[in-house]
Amino acid sequence: MAYTYMPVSIKLKNRPCLVVGGGIVALRKVEALLDYECDVTVVAPEVDRKLEYFAGRGKITLEKRTYESPEAARYGLVISATDDRDLNHRVYEDGHHAGVLVNVVDDPPHCDFIFPSVVRRHYLTAAVSTDGQAPFVAGHLRAVLSTVFPEHWTKLMKHAAAYRGMVRERWDGNTLKKQACFERFLEADWKAMLKERSAEEIQGELTRMLEA
Image (cartoon, rainbow, N blue to C red; front, side):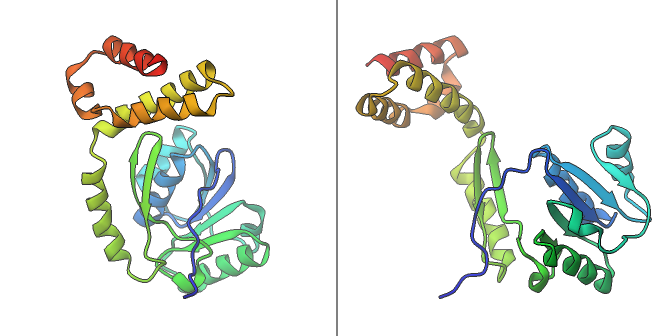
């Protein structure tokens, strides 16, 4: 079977991104992009008030005008979220032919990438996609993933990242020692530990895991 979309993680920090459209759908895409510290420009004659707010706070660049072809070619990532089918397709052609990844919302044939359903717990991102064929299933599975990774995983991931640094510093070059440390971390009852112990006690437990 041939698939359409390969799951990858793309570094977006400081990447210039264009969102064409100013409605609620465009707003949702902008909010998603802002989590990754990219440089977002929104182009639309009329925009949602929250987009005006983001622009006022310096979070995005807002240009209240119509899209001017072929400006999509100047960006590193493009999303078209207007209710004008012809405009959406023009944005896609402009970006796609320039080698820019383009997503036209709710129009899979004009998407070089799609947005998976995501559950995020700090550094942990769990995403599920149905290759663009049945997104309602992906939405359902996002709820399932929320039960697999409950909220305490947010704190757990912070400790995991810090612990990895401790292990690398203490056992640099010793693969077996590092693997043993990571196994002890994964075997711990983190749900109980996060609920019952203070930050100082958890730090002490991490140190014990490091030297055991």
